[in-house]
Length: 114
Length: 107
Image (cartoon, rainbow over all chains, first blue to last red; front, side, top):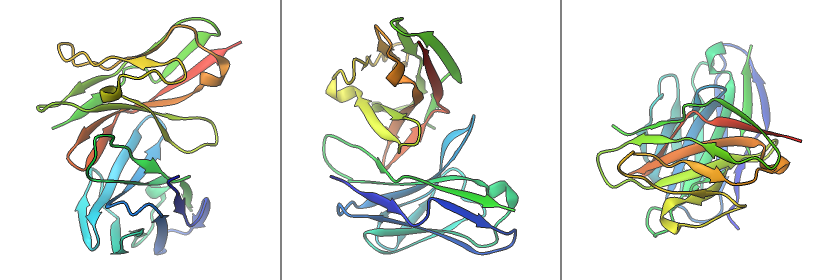
């Protein structure tokens, strides 16, 4: 059973703080993803990684960076948090190959920036 | 560019009524489409994928390449079907999601 875990369920930070969101998966998946989920906007891809130390920008990378030093761990970094980054952040992982593609999601981190 | 459109933000039906959640896509290649569901206080999870041609929890979805649609259907809605539903299109490594439809099934 695939498990994707995220370091925090709820997080409150102040404007200008550096914020780290951590995600860990235990199924040896090559791909990992960070999304933000906002009402009326759906899921928007921030960054994804298809291998260790590899990353690609998604649709809304501005204001974010990522780090993938180990295969199982993918970190999202907000260098200087702003109020418009208040959102639900979802991490996901997937295999690259195989006929039954599926992304497995973590429980989410609700970040509030005040 | 790939794009997924879910025209209804909200859909409300009564228990036992048929339900159809619409999804249209734009993609230049051969599409691979999915429906994901998020129940209240649960994580987002795969409901079904078009290549499996399966029925999950009574839901089915048929890929119509002519109309570029992948609508989700269930003949008799149940209260436990109330959830947020996302249609998604696979391209390379990633999925592009629609904005979602919140389905409410009333007793």
